Image (cartoon, rainbow, N blue to C red; front, side, top):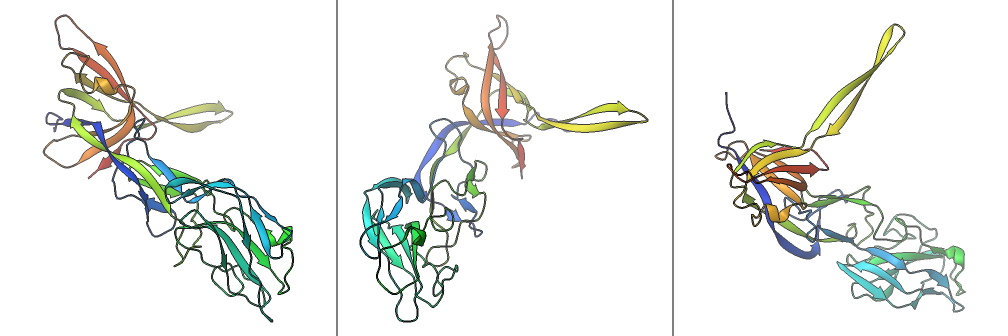
Length: 323
């Protein structure tokens, strides 16, 4: 029977940082990728994700001036940078002749300046982006903070009911929809597809900084057990039958490491850190098991034997196999 005599265990010994940059839409406007296969979860190196969108402020109210609205001071994620924008005013556009309906998008452009973008006027309003009577497409590197919908060609003070700021429809915020970070895959997945409200029917920009793990061998290791899901069965007896149920538990990964002195070893220096681990059942083949979790170490210093550490890998998800 095969053994793990030629196995190899590696741990995340370092990180290569990547600066804040735009992620790539995978094509579904839901998952955005970095090109890196793994993101580190170690404290100080974990990814920072900044979807374009409003963070605070930005209330939109009418003014006493015809066709004008006031925009309160705001902060937003703008192309990877947390940006502050002073309060200001913007003019909404009205339709002409019989095309009485016009929607103006209120945005912050790529330079951090409040900008009004007028749609095409029409005889009726439309909810289709870019259509006559509908909201306009906005620049790819800008953020929409609201819309003004005017249904008359006569100049007048904007009514509060003509201002629209529904999140995800008229307003882009940084926290909607929610997203999950995929450390294995180096990507971000949103709970729902981002609206295709930008020029070219594309979604808003999503930026992230991250670090890719750099692996080193655990020079002397044995008895690796990956973190995996275990299942158990419970039952209760009822009249004439038994009712069963199942439960799942994620077990800790474990391995033994033999140390040089138990103090200055590279592995010891990373105890309690959230790290990636690669286990190759055969160091001469490419297949391996990949796991991420917090490294726990319990050292033993015997008088007549090797210094060693009983190590645990406390993971939030089960290990995966990589061909």
